[in-house]
Amino acid sequence: MTDSRPVVTRFAPSPTGYLHIGGARTALFNWLYARGRNGRFLLRIEDTDRARSTPEATAAILKGLEWLGLDWDGEPVSQFEGRARHAEVARAMLANGTAYKCFSTAEEIEAFRDAAKAEGRSTLFLSPWRDADPATHPDAPFVIRLRAPRDGQTVVRDAVQGDVTFGNDQLDDMILLRSDGTPTYMHAVVVDDHDMGVTHVIRGDDHLTNAARQIQIYQAMGWDVPVFAHIPLIHGEDGKKLSKRHGAVGLHEFAAMGYPAAAMRNYLARLGWSHGDDELFDDDQARAWFDLPGIGKAPARLDFKKLEHVSGWHIARMEDDALMAEIAAYLAETGAPALTETQKARLAPALPALKAKAKTLPALLEQGHFALVSRPLAVEDKAAAALDTVSRSILAELTAALQHASWDRDDLEAAAKQIGLSHGLGLGKIAAPLRAALAGRSSTPSVFDMMLALGREETLARLQDQAG
Ligand code: GLU
Image 1: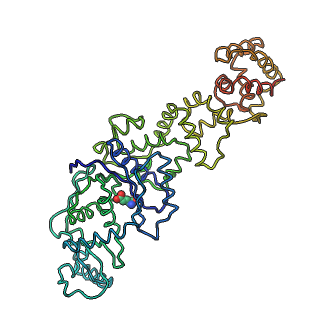
Image 2: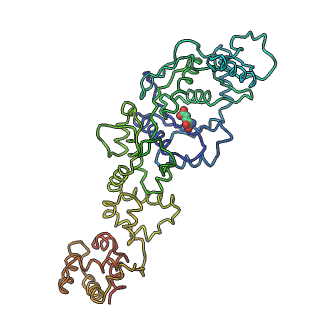
Image 3: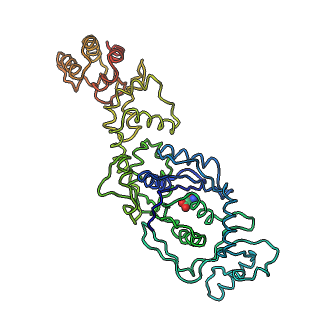
């Protein structure tokens, strides 16, 4: 349907666990859709199932959204808190005749189903109370059921799936309010979406059948039906529905693997949605480009190679401050200690060289190890092997030569070359002892990148420590 109201989308997780990668993508799609249209993006915690909902799960979901950088408007809405309103709407439906009181007991419903099965009829319950005269109503517990249309069809005009038609004979008179006065999930969702002014419902296609039932409630209340967009679920690399078997499925697991949030936003946006051949983009582009026609009908596959590629692209182009913040979030996620001020001060000048090569944050920190360690450096065995007598004397000579060198790459390189040559050694040969002295390791970034990042004082001190 077309709709001129300002766009309002929502993410409506059930707080029964952590934020799944599929949920994160649903949230992202809703966020992008709203943010690209000056709309509002709301958050509703579907906590009506008291037995399964926990505050810890709510906290984990909020934390996941925050990590991913998806900000929502207003306070999160608790579905449970709205139960009085849900009951009020069910009673309004009683009053307008689109719902009725059903006094059938669980035993009666079971007996109905058994008989239907035995006679080969549909087992969808047909309540005898649908058309009963209220004068005959007993003084007994009742549920409120929707008086669903018996004939015709209910069509979900889905922005992704197209028109999906359900025969009304397949949809029973669903319960809106239980006999204890609590709303059913289906009813609560519709009332909440209406009250929150939701114009677009973007969610997993496991809710497609629910949409047909929900449309019947909208129609019974004479409310505008939102635009529905049911997105195919995410599959693993083997093409099967994503599950724990595939490894990481929680957003926090991706955070712990060191993919920056900016990269996850880009990658998840492409998981089931496309804009031409664009694979790599920033938030501004994503907000400007994201639309419903670009959502595919086929399930998207999680592809770690692509994710690495996207991640590397984002790390390389990230502002240093933003990258530092991503690193801090990564360390916190893995439970590692935060960087000290000294480490931050040493790492910052190294970032330009490091970020050009790293695909993930741990890869960046691995290469940036030299900036994180303090003197006296522990030298790994493999690196120590490069520190023979000749090498140590080269380090001593270099220490002296660099006292007054201007601290730029050309001069550093020239000085190192010259001293190497005086010993008949090329740069390649003297790089190993330099790596050992500057990083305590044999695999490091370029020695000149390290020197430039460490600065004169620290570089000379490290060389001196190993000089003979
Ligand atoms: N609470 C539902 C879920 O977590 C989402 C319902 C909806 O988006 O309408 O799957």
